[in-house]
Length: 266
Image (tube, rainbow, N blue to C red; front, side, top):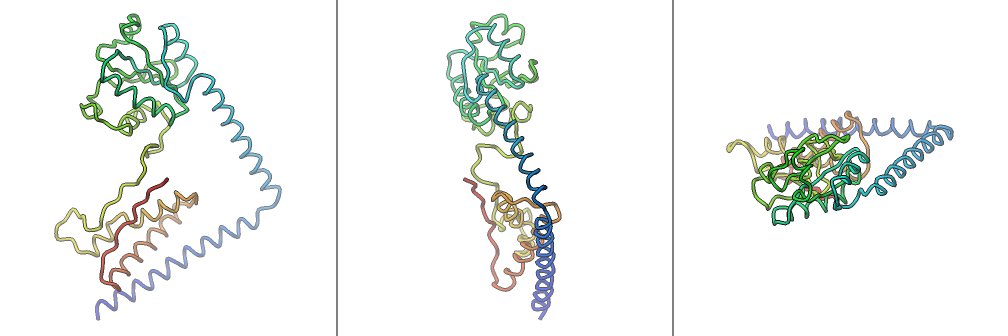
């Protein structure tokens, strides 16, 4: 009897949330219908200008050597490189295994982050730079912004202390120094972090509590956003409520827990 009452409440909540989302979408569609040809042309022109500026910027980056991991042949060339590019990641190396590990990761990241120039220079052949920048441990990665060394990654201590660290870990370290463009998710990652609703911080948590605290609703929203749709904060909240209520409703009706959707963007 109590279960039936809860189910009726959830049904009403589900209908309320669905109606709110539907009304919001209807408003957006109506707003689009009110856009006249002049507005569309202005939007199109603005977008074309943005694309043109980005194309020009990419062309300039490529001309400066961005997009590839390259060797700096001399100390003089080092100064020219850091003055030409706003962001430079420079690996001071010698011919040993740890430096080859860094080379592998930086060659991958150079292709992923066109906005930053990735280079390497032989520390043993650059005594002036090594002394000026206090390069003692090899490998050392100098993180340079606006022609100034802003930070260093020295050895592997910040990357787990071993040579089996991932490219993503190094990418996140570079992002922390703001020497690459980064939006919170690695450009290398192929899946979002999810977990089963059975995993709970409390051993005595019920199935319904697990559903309410699971990332199920967020995963659904991430999927919608990944597919190219844009929602404001109100719509995100509505979808969160919609999917959470749906999950609990399904639990009560069918007597089983809901498994979160794992998102694997291609």
